[in-house]
Image (cartoon, rainbow, N blue to C red; front, side, top):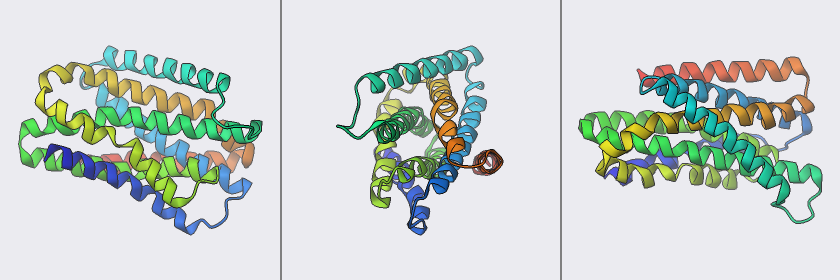
Length: 241
């Protein structure tokens, strides 16, 4: 049952690709807008994570955030030194690198959510159901953020949905051991939350927003990113109850 609940939250992430069925063509300007949406959603999710992490430990969350920044720097350097696409050219290579980065970061981010699902079963089925539904609903805009970056690089909508689900597979995988060994997993939770938040914020500032500003006007990109961030933060507040 713990694994099934975790799988439900993973599948919900794929729903974030559905709005892109309406986006038939992806122009340069649309790329900028999609990246702005992704940036805002990821920043809003990161701020929510940081607020949650401080409940378990401030310096632990900060330490995790620092590790997240270092992880992005190391991963980015590795991907630049070991291109992931054969002969695609520098522009296409940068796009592919960003796609690998966002899927990697969101996959790591899912580890902490998987732990939260497993640990919630210790409080009874009512709490577990509430946490599962909250994370599942929360995963939909995260799927939008992932799909926005992938779609802007020409990935089909079904593949966007598939990669979104893949990024959340650590949730059912981590939920089971977290349920079985909740006391051992609890101290690591603020580090994991901080790691996910730090990695997402740094990736937005380093990769996604700069590309967005290069594809559209600063006023438009700034407006879309800000409104997306506010919407994500309000959404999280509503889901949290």
